[in-house]
Picture (spheres, rainbow, N blue to C red):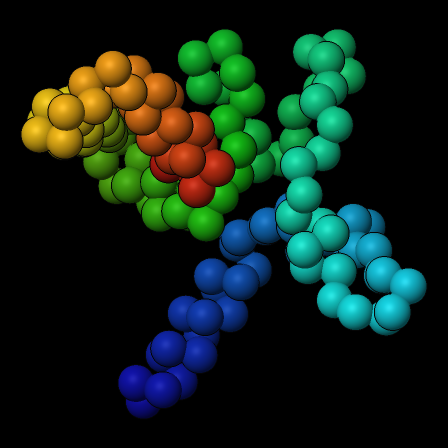
Length: 133
């Protein structure tokens, strides 16, 4: 019973998540016939705002388009269960606590000058993982 439930849950998770690195159109084979995973994960050329199109899984994030990542289905479920206002309050509290922890770490390690760069990096990583949809 539990195995069947986990199998169904796995199928649902696979069906609802879309990772652009594994899309069929982006796969490239090397001359040696090796895996295309590394090639498909390289950063692509930056596009201008006029070239950028909104796809099905993208939503606005502070003027930018948020990426659909591995945690996006969980964020959508939380938005449905809690509502947008409560989710935004909870998200703001989490971001505040994380920024405070980064500041405390930078103070402890003597690298307070890196605080803003680390916070920006955390935001970028959160966007890639799908926390900001």
